Length: 446
Ligand code: NAD
Image 1 (cartoon, rainbow, N blue to C red):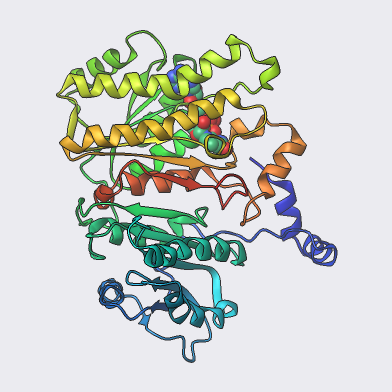
Image 2: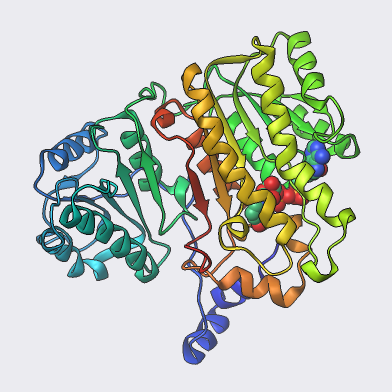
């Protein structure tokens, strides 16, 4: 999909005009493969707690250039502020204010990550400090420049900062894989999960299903999971059979032509898996549609299919997979596609927002059910992503939607795919019922 405005303001004459008139000039976001090192160094770890020492040691073990002060650094790649022991709001400044003087030294595509604990409703002063981290981080994300991002990790009380989920979230948020994630928090609520042994192929040996895989975000998810080593089962409607076969050939994946809303779709999928002797470790429930209309003009023809594809099919498919008993591996990971519309609501999308808010509540409940199997369920809520779905928006609405985020551009399908690959990884076992926004800090919702 083309973003003609961004192309124009990146050209020499366009850049000049945009500068003079004060128009947004979106930066090029570094993505996987654009950087020689997974973590942009030097990394400055702020904070004096044992947790801060632990994080610094972990980064050293990754071979990263780690510092504990900004001192004479002319360029800073990443900053990690460890605030796990703050007990009153007065504690925040001592850890965070040194970053103020270094903001102008942040490299293009720099990463800032806070590590703190969620407010627990017990100690008012401590909770005020913990809540304060969230307000700080979300505001800082709005102030990041040149494609930089700022995100936070909330680590549940009793979970150590060396838990796999913390390490995995840190690795994801510091890397170019989180290019379009900013102003967000990931909550690591348990110490479950395990370290990734093969960082180049973190999903090696795993089998993953992706629904709605023929094009757009689904195809990007399939390609990303395959690049991470997973074996793929790609599913889409029979009408998308040609595109699906092409993708399946490219990835040596198993194609399944199936309408997820058809009667007995879950049982049919179980049959296919059994016939092929496949056991799923990962299920990505991505198939989705829009049928936008103001609610005053809403009809069952527009309402029903959106609810059926976007949420009811997810409930039916997961139920069939769980009931079958022999087609899910140990510690299964389910990742669903929500949307920022489901968080903030969107004019003309009552049906779509109902389905996507439903997805978020669904993964929360499903996570509790999967816990007994050592599994997890989480969701990703994309903002504006450049796909055929958004290409169908009216031109002006599309242009406004693209710019209304801190990174001033639409995300790419691969940005959503990267977040899903992280949530599907063994390290993400401590994240449960989370919805991670991949939206460039879309100015909507909370
Ligand atoms: P898309 O329209 O480009 O692709 C959707 C895919 O789902 C298609 O291949 C389609 O054939 C398949 N599909 C639709 N109905 C199906 C059914 N009944 N059974 C099986 N497959 C079916 O859409 P996209 O932009 O790639 O969106 C993918 C997901 O991401 C959707 O859930 C969407 O709601 C969500 N999302 C997208 C955006 C965005 O900006 N593009 C933003 C937020 C959320």
